[in-house]
Length: 232
View (cartoon, rainbow, N blue to C red):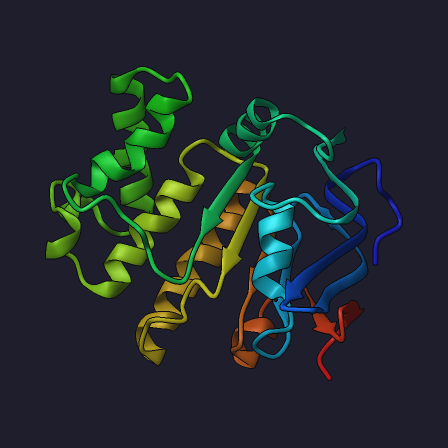
C-alpha cells in the first residue's frame, strides 16, 4: 500500500470495529490500514459478512470505528461532531449503493440537482450541472423522467450522477452493479470507471465480481478482519 499519507485522499489507520451478538462479540475489522490516492480506483473484495459494507460506512463517516483514525483530504475526521462529518460527506464524499435509492417523486435532473442545492449551490447552477452529468451518463433524453420510467441500469446511472454532483474527492461504492444483469452491470460499470477516472477521484468499490475487480487499479481483500492486497 502507498506510504505517501500526506497526499492521500483517504487514509484509514488501525481501524477496528466489533459488534455484540448476545453475550459474544464479533470482531469484524482488526487494525485495517488503507491509503487511497487521487485518481486511484481500488476494488474491495471479500466473502459476504467479511465487513466490506462496514468498512465503507466507516470510510464515509456514516459509522464510527471502535479504534483507529479516518483521515479525508488531510483532515482527521475521528471525533468530529455530526456537523463536521456532514460537511465532509457533503463536499468530499460521493456514495453509490447497490440499490439506487432515488427519490421517486423527482425527475432524474432533480435527483442529481438536490444534493447540490443542499450544499448551497443555486437552483439554476445545480440544474445545469445535473444536465451536464446526464449527458455524460448518456441519459439526456431521460432528464425529465421520474425513476419509475427508467430501467434499472438507467436508475443506477442517475445514482452515479447524484454521487458525483458535488464534485467529491472520494467515491465509495457498495456493490454498485449487484442488482443488475451482467450486460447492464458491465455498461454501468464502464460509465462509473469513465467518470471516476475523468474526474481524478479516489474510489473504493466493493464488488463480488472478479472480472470487475480486475479492471481496477488494484485489489484489496478483507480476510478475517484484516485488509490484504490482491485476490486469494
